[in-house]
Image 1: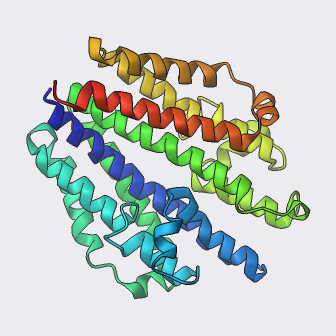
Image 2: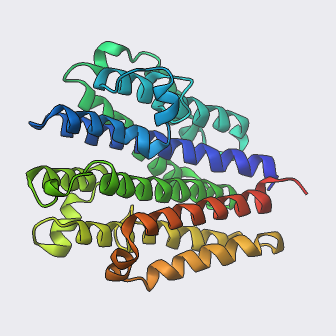
Length: 313
């Protein structure tokens, strides 16, 4: 497959996943804003989506305060923000247009109709009771795209590059979500173990569709250590780091070629560290330090994949 086409397919999937993850993150912030809390916690809650996506400084350059209205506009409708839902949907559609011959008509129709519908979204829908319905709609469109892809696409190299983009973007998002919750939303020790702490960890689980799974696995009160174990080490949890890296390693094995041996090696190392990892060792090292190290490794792996497959020789 031509490197340019592979790159378009890879980024098409990454942008679809990015739009969904942004909607999930904003949903958590919105749910938390409904809880009784002081102004400090309210502002920190709306800073979380900006911290997760690394867009706090660009946002601060254009806004003097952090509030729900400005954050929702910036993370949903601002085309200048590459992490906004509208920007991600547009980029996914443009990448799909570039490879129309490599995707099915059903895949194209989902992305195209999603983009057209998003152009009808206005500020009023983000400041009313419809905002939660909007987040659900974004997630459903992402689910629809993946379902249509699995149900209609030939399981060839194009399909594998699509999956590769999905799981790399998802692993990055899950790691950032965990890190921001642990170090931004609760900076004061007196909040740990309280009602707000419980609802925040529950919101993190809901943001990755893991609340029911947590109850099935642990059948107990929600604790940071068990949330981290579920979202980092449990391979059966679809959005966990372990599940994502298992998929990435398997895909790179399928796409194996001499230029990609270093990418495969790094993916194998990451997968092995998660497969044999223990949550007590992670907390001994420090959750923030562990997640920061993981994100650096993902960035390095992404660069190796780019060099191996997307840079023309």
